[in-house]
Length: 278
Image (cartoon, rainbow, N blue to C red; front, side, top):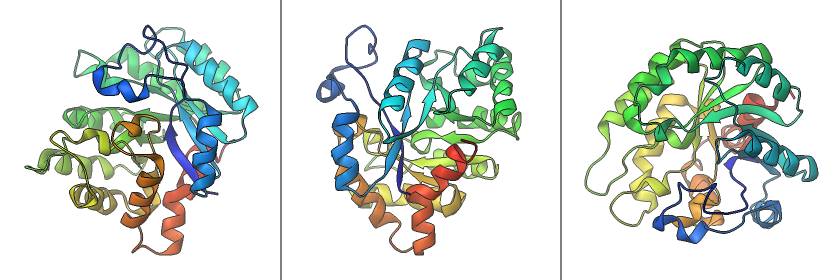
């Protein structure tokens, strides 16, 4: 099975998606399963993991509703209030949903750069291990040192790094701080990394494969083929790339690997990390 590990759905409005600025004009509209299905078919993909884009329970319910009516959605990474004292009951409720595979919080939008180390947040994270749920880590590269400390507090939980931890990708300078820290993080065997979101992190011009290749090489060396997952970040990727172009880019990056390793990155690891307990 070939699975896109990271994409979003939404019914756009200015209130719920206040994080969208001028740079996001191309995606300020509805994106629903009927829009994704032909893209999956065109690229010989069997389905996707739908990931939250709003920090509300309503978002989790919205995605679960879509999943119940659309077989292309193989799992949902939702949102719950992990800092609240009653979160254990909320996690237990949603863990019973067959399509919930994990949760995410938009760490990189928190004004406190040390948010990921907060005691209340970590108490919420601890609830996930009782239900074999994953946690998706959405950060900028500047958050990597504290993320390493965070992961070390939860060795029994599968952690998934979104968008290779959002390095500052530039034509003029390689992000060496990111490279050093992502290698340290990858030493934690409960951490998997998504090959997603790279095109929208380019800060000074248009991207090409030669620009992104060194970043791919670093995460391949650090995580190995058994802890990398293809993800499109559709429809956010449309700001810089169409869906098929990104699929083809990842396929070109992994073309020198064995067929078994390529299969793992394009879906096998998604099944193992997200879906093995479902």
